[in-house]
Image 1 (cartoon, rainbow, N blue to C red):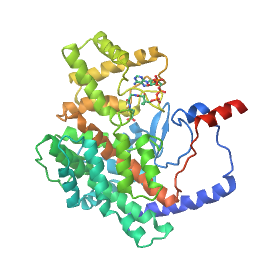
Image 2 (cartoon, helix red, strand yellow; image 1 turned 90 degrees about the vertical axis):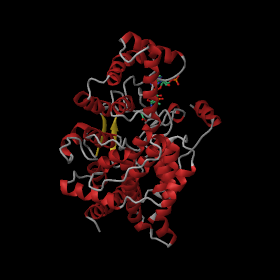
Image 3 (cartoon, rainbow, N blue to C red; image 1 turned 60 degrees about the horizontal axis):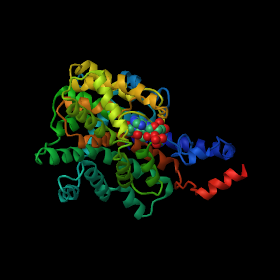
Image 4 (cartoon, protein in one colour; image 1 turned 45 degrees about the horizontal axis):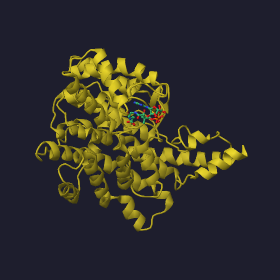
Length: 435
Ligand code: CMX
């Protein structure tokens, strides 16, 4: 057994036993009230999920096993002279709660490379789809098609004990994460580079190799990908994609199917697809305003016109956050260091000045600040990745790290089938009457 798997087994078995006895004694403790407005309002703030890998604070933003994004950038191992953290290191941290050593991270890069082969039929599934099928449609189908490889499915069919569920889930999670960059790069090259595919460079790390297979070998772009794939990796359990994976996984569906479902959720414009919507919005603004050097008044007019047409401002607002998203700030710092002269990046910064007061003025938007999706596209455009229909796939490659580390925990802890109570409007009226 590898060091990582062994550590995970030790830690999860210990926590499982502790939680079992704590729940035995304290399981009846009341943890909060639920308001009717929450039942009808997308369950905001209702505590109903357990997620070990990260925790979101509305003011401070995300912490991965207690570490903020600036702390990750300082503490996680790096490589090749790049100062950005390696996503491998974040996965290790999320899975076992420890910052890995350089040697452990190098082991994980090699381990994912070793597991990265993609079944031949997955390419056939992709090739059967029209070239104009949205990249997220292709990503979802490719991931689902790889469930032929699931160790969990094989062992369940052979009659596995509940106590062993964690083991093939760990194997599936590691295998799926290892395969995602090559699948995602295949979709990109198929759609936008005439199917001129690029072989993996086995000497590179997970993110660096993904950049290479996309066809962008600039070392700065590799640094960006390491940062990008780190900061998008997890946002606690209640966000739509993570929650979808958790729900599907709770039926004992394997991680290929549950992660494919997660990607269906990520593909909505209120969630991960917002990254493509942001750059589309910026391109429209440039086209309508007649150039990419605009005054704040021109930017404001475009924002107000968008709102007046009944649309949202993509990249702004959040269901939990009430401050600028630290993932936005991390990308801004990157852009300030590497590409501060890009006009599109400058437009992102102008939007940051203009949008919050306009949204505040509407009097209903709970969070007028930028989220993670407000910045990413402008940086990608700078490095030549202009095909914005593809952007959510990048997000999806990253999100696997947190969601699949959490899937391991869910299996190890033995979490049950998820089954919340639904109600109808008659129930709501009876509650109002009885009050
Ligand atoms: N532009 C215009 N209106 C907005 C807005 C925005 N960016 N954000 C919120 N609002 C509106 C809502 O549509 C809602 O209006 P109605 O009452 O007329 O329906 C009102 O303000 C209250 O919404 P809220 O409680 O502040 O926000 P929610 O928790 O309901 O929704 C989110 C959160 C992200 C869906 C919303 O802010 C939004 O639509 N943002 C734009 C899309 C986006 O960037 N999504 C990406 C989020 C990050 C991610 O998951 O990747």
